[in-house]
Length: 266
Image (cartoon, rainbow, N blue to C red; front, side):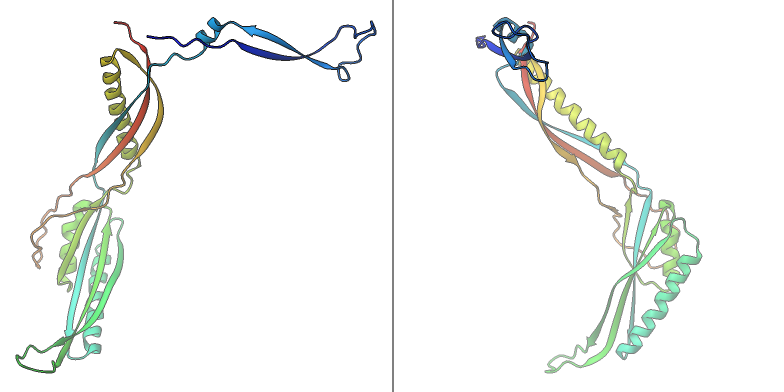
């Protein structure tokens, strides 16, 4: 391996002369004297000992780490759909049923319960008479959604039962999620870094070098979204059936560029 000769470095030290000045006169006080520069030579061998020894280049690797997180919250979205001969009748019927659903869920006393309505719509229904040039409005459909979030994932079945029994006629979705994924993200990131470093170590040693310091690092960990409950259909009847939550996966990916160190022994 070729060694590059380092140039001699001239160091500069700043000091105040305390001896007599030119002409034999005493030097003025330190704060008024001329400050003189002294040059000294540093041997090239000393520079080579102090400078870090590196190899011929760098290695760039990627690492991935995944950690499973058990959900501790669940959300269930219900739809209340009502019909009426007029827009007012459909809307009023929907409001009555929605009030009953919300009251039934609140009265059940579920842990960490949060309720929110969303996605209200009111649309006309038309007749399906064939060859009719102008379709006739035969009624109106009102649709409203409510999302119930609980901190007990095992209570999802009971939440569904209460909502259906009080008038909800559709289950629009079930999702499970972890309220705090911070520790899992940190663990996944550390795992990704260890994986990347191990790969770089193998590459460096296979080339006959030691692994150097990291030069550049980039990456991050994902924030997983809620896990949807996979079901073909939800029966609109009371059946306190356990619904199991699936784990969330937190994934981290890093890209690290390592310097190639000096030649390794052997």
